[in-house]
Length: 240
Image (cartoon, rainbow, N blue to C red; front, side, top):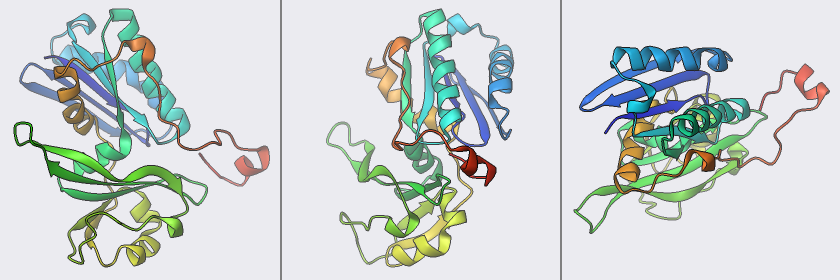
């Protein structure tokens, strides 16, 4: 199966193409330039894979939560390319993509949501009866909150330090979060971001099961009601 995955929910432009059994990736810190670079970089990856857009069987994208503009870029590009070439799409929770990228089985994901808040979720890999596969289970639902209001772990909250903290929220609010999760936290990976490779891994079984959606149904995941700042807030340097 030939698949394209993309994410622009952070300051990184992350792309991946699976062409049969070969993986082509691009992961670059671009700041606010994703909108300018994403289409040329997708074409560069297609050229590297010796493929045309119509050779793809699916497009996966980081649906959010994340930077409002970045999430819209990823969704819009997935929708536009998918609609134009009649390719189905799959939107992946970016917090789950961080958990996948961590390589751990119990992950507390916190991404910096700006404005003194974090995007938060906790995930655990559990065995399923079907083919004895490990699948991610959301232990604490995806939400936006103040770091000091991060939810405690009510499920699987062993006193053993078996949880990994991942994402930029741990870099900005590490002291507060470590205090909340000190009983459960083994280590942190504050530099982890959603990657297209992780999104691709999460999307593969969805495509294989025939559960992808038409491109016209691609939609971002918004969990913050406010999607704009006042002039004073922008002048003060606040960002969504």
